[in-house]
Length: 185
Image (tube, rainbow, N blue to C red; front, side):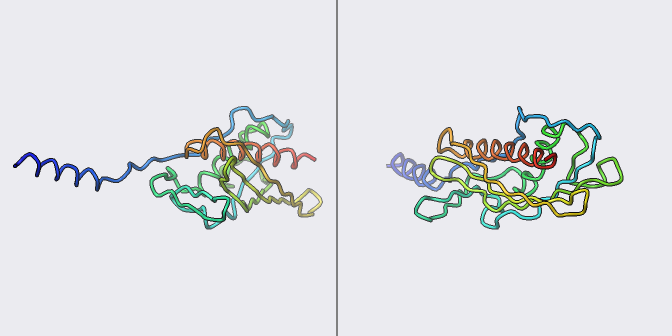
């Protein structure tokens, strides 16, 4: 009589256990195209906006029917805003061919760094791809404000959260290359 009670208790305890929490991070692109930087200009990257819906510890998935799923056990290893900004800095370093890129103006050399302000308008997962849409701006040498936009998508290798993080990382790397190219147009 004692064994069935122990078995029932074990099943009850096992049924109450929750799924383990997994953590993900964004990574910089490995093979960014390098744009020459002959003057070793300094660049400061300021991520001004990230959609509130996704700026949370959990990964967020938009379903085709408009439903939004917040994945409670799939979380960012650090605040998403910080990760996006740091990955863009590293991707721009590679794309611009200089280490003189940072999010902190005190950490770049030179007296007149070019400040690139970025607003992420979409950071989404759909059924078969991730999408990052952004707007960035900077002041040109003549004082004009230059504004560019872009949408960057990557197909998903699978519908697993690790594939979402990898897809977003690749989309951000593409964005870094496009930003670097727009600065030299």
